[in-house]
Length: 126
Image (cartoon, rainbow, N blue to C red; front, top):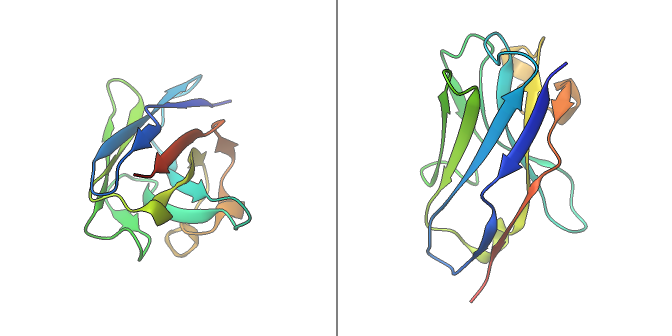
């Protein structure tokens, strides 16, 4: 069993940067596809970024490429999402997730993941 806890969300102005973190416990994240999704009010949960299971590749949703960066610290069993040039439309609850058997073509598919955190709210507003 893997427990995921996100933290670091908050209220920021448009154009600002923010880093959210996801600390895992129970098992090491090595061998899991791990990443981030987000969900805005009234919308579907949307893929943001993820590492492949072997950690050798990263993937981003089209709307965040070039502005968001996913990273990890295996020693701390923690995954990060650095968000730059934030826009009001980036406002959402950001969820950390991990999956044991997520193949590359299914990385953006939220139904392929086994574990989810409780989410952290990110609000971009002036």
